Image (tube, rainbow, N blue to C red; front, top):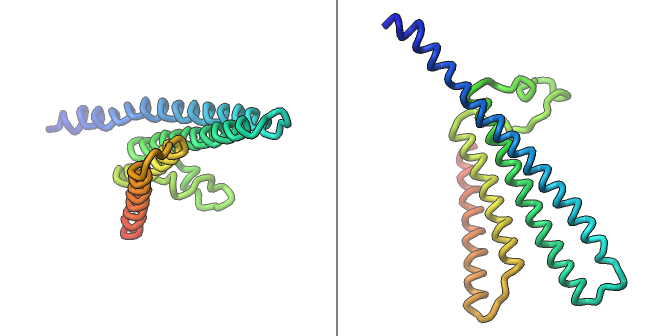
Length: 181
């Protein structure tokens, strides 16, 4: 038993640092997604500047508008995914390695994070990730809805059912959050 207390338990405790791999690579993935979404945003802005061009006829302008809205939705999706990876990296670090002292600063002038980034348990991390993932799904639904063509009443009814189910999911998520506080 003395061997376990002296050698094995410290070894087991130190193995938690393997989580640093997940933290570093999740943070790297987050930064890459922020970079990619920002490049997409810059490209979209450059692309949208042609919207004013007098050379565009109304059909070309409508196509450009539709493409721009689709790009905007994809950019939002990219930023949300980057936020998921950032929250995941910070949450894993705080749960397994150490609290982030700068985030816990009592001086409001030095406080750089919000409550969204403060993770206190694995359930808390899962809840916060689930919220952001739900927003990604909402954005994906919106992205698909933009491209949707209605051929008959059943298509419109199915779309309305999707909107209703999405609203229900958001309502239930909101209600579940209200019960926790």
